[in-house]
Length: 495
Length: 140
Image (cartoon, rainbow over the protein chains, first blue to last red):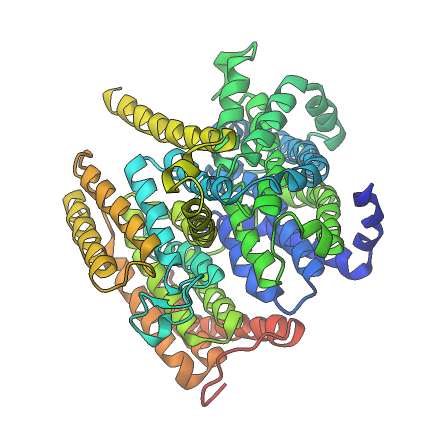
């Protein structure tokens, strides 16, 4: 099997060092209440520029895995999820910590994350090559709708207001058109020389995720009073492992739902965690205990958000459509190394991709071990002063952005986008649909234009894009998710 | 910030975008943007039907920070990355302080030291280890 061939390459001293470093930094960054995994990975991308593609990807993959798990630490001990993916974890995890079971809770986090993560990566290994082959059968119209689907799903599920979410996505699409028209080469919306090259994906990523966070930290500087709970009892790790493995229902529901949510374009850790939590509660014998410190809640949520990681790369690697917001960031990482997802990824860049995927398995092990050790000593992480974090992120953002194309224009664009995004988020707009819009915009437009060409000589534009089984399925999912979004919006207002 | 302001701003923006893409661009070049701006306009109108929810921004604590950010970017080209970052770090750490008692001089030296340490780590990690280029101005 292909994936076995490249396993050896993961075990070089350099790569192992990267795995260790990436996991360590990832858990710490994930644990910091002020940083999200999406942002941390985004900030790191420019710095991998000078590495070999496989090494850079190994580092990013390790960080992605670790931050999603590390966020559990602050979710438990501070009741501030380190990442949106840990929102569901905090529901019971924090209560457990308050009751003195912090150690147990953290054990369950990492053990469940490990199990979920391994399952997720296995899905990635076995599903990606066949899906890549399947994607060869997708024409421009299918690819167009898949791109639209990615934006629609995240716009309708992630935001509190469907309209705002879709507006974000649309603005992202619009931003992606700045610069040269892909087919005609003519310029669009280039008002100043700074905009000539368009908005680079990573510039957008860093600006839209990191800068609002900086401003947010400064804005709330005087009101943040964080109380860090104690690690708690001295449960042995082995005891926790035995208990955790025995919770098959929670683990299965968590992992399975995590995988499904991961594969769905756009839907990420937050949705995975919450859905798994809800469903586990529904099927649990002790429903009433959920919210009062029920370990199954933690187990389900954490296995789900790590099971999501691997599969979120499946649509990314085969169709260029990210399966989650952080996968979207990884796309930036791939592109910056000149690796273009799609059917021939496994032909032209076989070695890099398989080394990367294989490293994810090892990353789960690192995450488990380092996580278990670190969570015991993690109190200090959450006591790092906000202003240090704020300026640290700012400087890294500037640093990283500049190093992409050695351009100060990029830094300027990044900051302007960030400041606007900050104010927009105050008005209820989310950055994620915007980012997906910027990333998927070129894919949507390219396929739209190609489809238009084909349609003109064939059946006509509307027919071309709306007929065919796959097209109909995709369009229906889009419409359904918009409808569902509006429906739950109306429901929550009445209730 | 009132929600109505958002609605107004968004409607104004969508109008401007419509004009930009329909009036100033040619049909073929701006085809995709035109479709998008129409969609934006539709949703901007839909937004008017959403309930109002006022949002608060703590402008006061934020302003000094914003100022530092703006000045920082300006200085990048002039003073170079490491010097500007050092100054940015120092300013933020001075402006945003917890109220602690103690020796004033010691605190000042403490802050300068941390800022220097921060920039030193940056240099080691990125300048030497990862070999990343930085905006170099007149200084460093």
